[in-house]
Image 1 (spheres, rainbow, N blue to C red):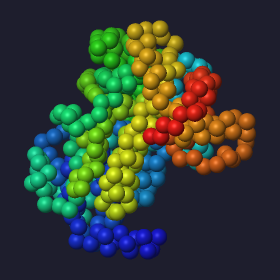
Image 2 (image 1 turned 180 degrees about the horizontal axis):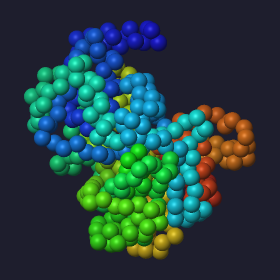
Image 3 (image 1 turned 90 degrees about the horizontal axis):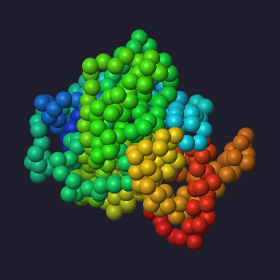
Image 4 (image 1 turned 45 degrees about the vertical axis):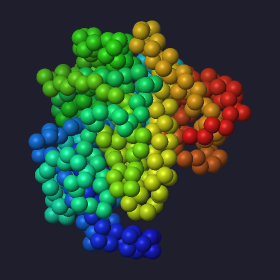
Length: 410
């Protein structure tokens, strides 16, 4: 480890990194790279002072709490007081086919978190204000920036010419509101299948964030507002006047890493939040970086595309399973899922992972037979829980058997 740090110190000597955007992605990127550059090079952090902060990506998988501890020295009290956050023990999934109500639980001793994204951004900004060059300037062109490398976290793109659109994902619009409370009433994220899509509930210390994901070509906002009344009534929530509605694309860059510029956050990708994969992907893009010489540009782009594709396929398993609602949305979602799931079952990595799922089922109190990297954000224990409780294990296994002679590598 000492030799590795010494190597990075030499590599970073006199280099200048520019970060564009001070949202959640920019804050994570700054936290990730500062230890490598501090004392060796420098970081210029550009931000548009007239751009309002966006509170997106407030639920995480297991990696982010470890990141907050190792890079920002935050602890459980900081989570509660500084970030208005709560521990996340798993994702409760309601009204999908299969069991109809189950908790996709995380391993004992491991948690994700829910956190206030705006407070996280302000905390990082305040913490680094004397260690990074903070520059309030709206960047129009990368050519105007004097830096060895640029990481663009400037948010949603204005055009999609440089992106691949993920047409398989059936949701493209959201209605979000905030329900304020005196204390959190549960310690997991809720994802609830509804007639027109699905609803998330994210519990923070002082509020529950409620979002309805739907397809605006099939249903409209009035349908959504009416259906949400059942959610508010069932969970004892009182909606505030604080709402946000917007349409979106699901997308990722055709080339995320170039010789001088890389992208992160919504400037790089967006996939719907069904499995809270955004923070995970932001961290992975940092890990795939070409700045520290860990990967070549070609290797980084390949890893990036593989990650996005696997996350897309993991998300689509829920639509492949379907819900208890026989509505136009869910019929459309199932049709969209078929080619995506078919492609996943042709992947030799997924076939090996499925073998471990069966080992877990046959040996519930024994360690897994071997260590297999994540597929998307799920390890084999997550696939075991979800394939069984969504009622699709046998269907997925049949597809793998059907495609076992295929050698389609992602």
